[in-house]
Length: 318
Image (cartoon, rainbow, N blue to C red; front, top):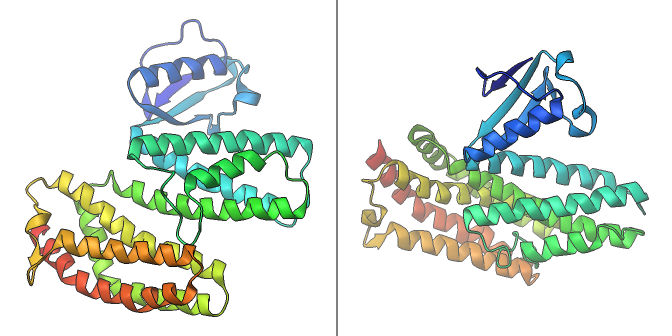
């Protein structure tokens, strides 16, 4: 059996390992000893499943391939997996009035995994989950996850399932935004430039999307509005996060020196963040009129004022 790591054939031969599970365990230890993370494993092109492949002999296998990455690779991969899992759970629960004992056990295990993934993300990205509230909701991420964990084994009627689904939708909004942010943190300079160019070119479309968000709220389509708003806000968050990486990729870039008409870039960024925070507070307080006005009028105006700063930064890094 041949063993590949990131498409490179492993030179050393197997000694005592006779089963796929033993090989998987040894390679995992080796990867962790190198300070890296195992992102995935395939056996003859099929994803390795410990429950069915652990005791399979290596003599029946031609190729075992491992995919290894850095911390950020691991986090992005796991968050994408978490996003798919949340979608799967939501689809399973929709329209149900109870779960089987087996489903309840699997959901409880899944809730523990969700907690583990988000704890890892908070440690790596220095997030305070007890302070972050997904756009449009009243609970913090910590509260949402705690509720999901506490109620995962007691979904025995439509009311408890609907409450669980509400928490799941809130969690989905946070995961979407977190994935968008983390994907930016490991990008190279040309890609960061592309993000900046794309945002500048798409400001008109972004402003139009905010108008649609307000229209959806005014017509009572709160779920549609919240999802659209989260997607739109994520574009802004991705841009703002990209500046953190940009300063790492281009150390000579001093954003504090970007000043237009006596106003600095950091001050203008602060103003934009204040508007985003005020929208979140208004939505939490169910003040749709106040939130709608900020979304449709204040936020587009702030983006117009932000545009010259972005154009100036683009000139400095071109």
